[in-house]
Amino acid sequence: MAEIAIRDAAHHEGREATIRGWLYHHRSSGKIIFLVLRDGTGLMQAIVLRNAVPPDVFQQARELTQESSLEVTGTVRRVPEGKRAPGGVEMEVTDLKPIQRVPAERPFPISPKEHGIEFLLDQRHLWLRSSRQHAILKVRHEVITATRNFFDGRGFTLVDTPIFTPAACEGTTTLFEVPYFDEKAYLTQSGQLYNEAAAAAFGRVYSFGPTFRAEKSKTRRHLTEFWMVEPEVAHATLEDILVLAEDLVSEILARVLGNCSSHLATLDRDVEPLKKIAPPFPRLTYDEAVSILKSKDSDIEWGSDLGGADETLLARQFDRPVMIHRYPSQAKAFYMEPDPLRPEVALSADVLAPEGYGEIIGGGQRATSLDFLCQRIREHRLPAEAFEWYLDLRRYGNFPHSGFGMGIERVVAWICGLEHVREAIPFPRTIYRLTP
RNA sequence: UCCUCAGUAGCUCAAUUGGCAGAGCAUCCGGCUGUUAACCGGAGGGUUGUAGGUUCGAGUCCUACCUGAGGAGCCA
Image (cartoon, rainbow, N blue to C red; front, side, top):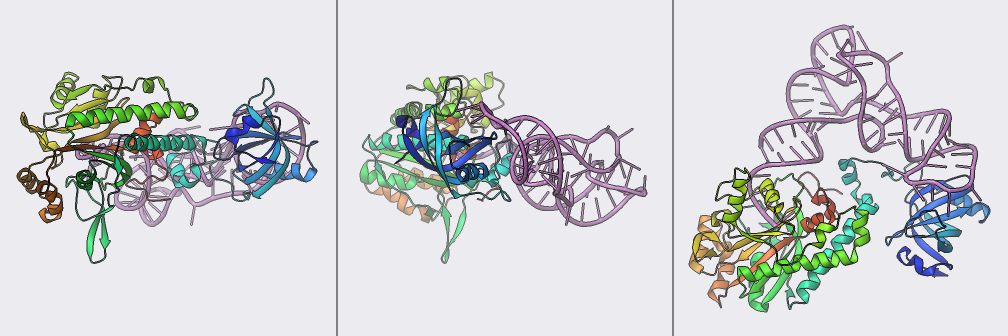
């Protein structure tokens, strides 16, 4: 007897097979019971007929509750003409063994009806089983795989950066402070500075891992813990990494569209806008962006960062991600290289996703001058001693280099068409949520 | 930190001007051989977020607090 995955059920048409999984839905109609099974690879309907199975099997099928775990054996067959079932094939059950029956006194909390977001987030450990959450996290997996393949295929070395850090990478945002024996440590908010050290050792590197920001942000685009991929390229200019960024985003889209069409359909995602994502992406200077925004009645002033509404307004002008470059230095991190032609702007860039999903990438060319960096560290009131090792990179074989960071959850939220990034990570952490 | 909104059954929500605490789903019992968030009949299920106040009477009005959601600022 073959034990099969639901994903492969169509290849077993006309044969007996066993499936191990969970009961997603069930409907009973007197002498016929419909069980919708879930095994992590898909959904399949199983049919139990009263006059075709032993009485105890029929009775056990009748008593099954939602999300009970079970093993079902039967004949795989095409769904009869005029009937519907997920996947096009169904199983006529010959035998059925409950592994654990969910007790009726304490049924599975997420019934197939509407629920509020607070309840669903409290039940996140169980909510993951729903077909919508399953589809989102499968897309997330493809986004991550595409990202790693992209860099691995271009000669990049994965270099893991520390999560405990001694000080801010960018003093502007809030850090999570944690006790570290007799001193204080902070959870990383970027692997950036360590990537620069690694780039001097390996040339082309990337880091991929969790990032923590203690920002008290309560918006659809923010988590306190999110995953970021950060490439850093020795001898690259701002223009070089803009090309890298548009190639990366385009390759991710191509892979997801190729491998996840059924998941995107589950999410009711309109894929037409996604099919247009290909290089080159439009590029705007910050100056051009500000004048476009002013012509659209934004009250932005030169020198300040773009607000969420500004980002959406700009992104709506284009059918693919838009790259805004050369921001005012005052709005950016201390390590950004000034534009030699206009020192008041930095060789920095952000990539804004279409359809109002906001900033998915931020990066730029790193400052090389030791004196300039010392001055900027003073201006930002950062603890100079914590950056001594970083300044060594300018003392020993100084080199121009550039890189960026891409937020995985924002990319997933955009591709899946989600209303909030909290669904794009298995267990979201937000300002008011630490559980489950 | 600020602004707005919301807390009533396990879940999603009603409850007229302040006047008997309700429905659907879920659960249990019964019916139905092709269901699709199945359907039909019945049953059980409540400290109305917490504390105080006004009133003959508060889910409803007032005060404080708690919890959550959406947004701003900040960011990926």
